[in-house]
Image 1 (spheres, helix red, strand yellow):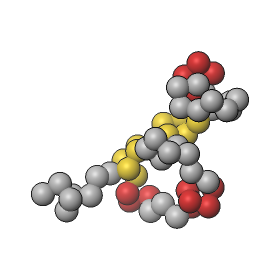
Image 2: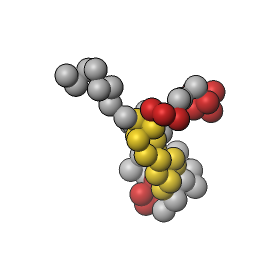
Image 3: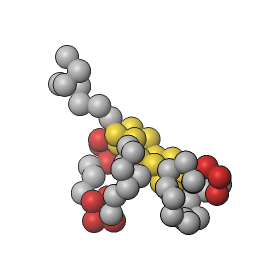
Length: 56
């Protein structure tokens, strides 16, 4: 997950590591259901840093 959107592996590879604020791995079935209706064993949530130029 990137923010609140599901992304493909191809899109994931395009992310610049410098722009990543945090990465969370959710593996509990009940918690995974909060993010997707699919029957996944887990989700990876990537939080991006905010663009400092936009916040000024």
